[in-house]
Image (cartoon, rainbow, N blue to C red):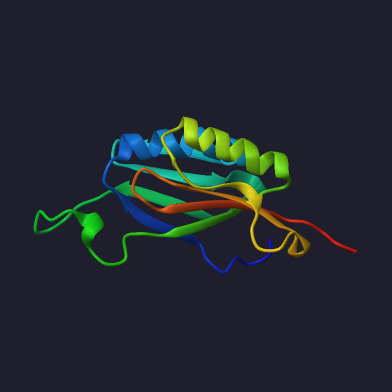
Length: 138
């Protein structure tokens, strides 16, 4: 198996049930699996097809009682690869049904000639989740 740049990416969620609903509802469109192993933790994985990297999402804890989302480093931009325009559109619809908020509807990002078609949504914690496909030209 080729080595991945990352083994996994972990981040916190202020509302694990809402995040779990969002990721379990939207990742199926990308053929990814969501595994909840505890009430305060779940994973997003490509299973045998692509075991690495994976996401580890855990309930937010704040030592001083402050809202962890206001602390530095809490907002991410995650980009997932899609196989087709249809998969981008399926993700977008599933994400909105699962509690995501619109950032950018499925469309060409930049000039159409660049061949990058994507959709962007905000997860329940305000992280940007992007799904896109690079078209082959030539």
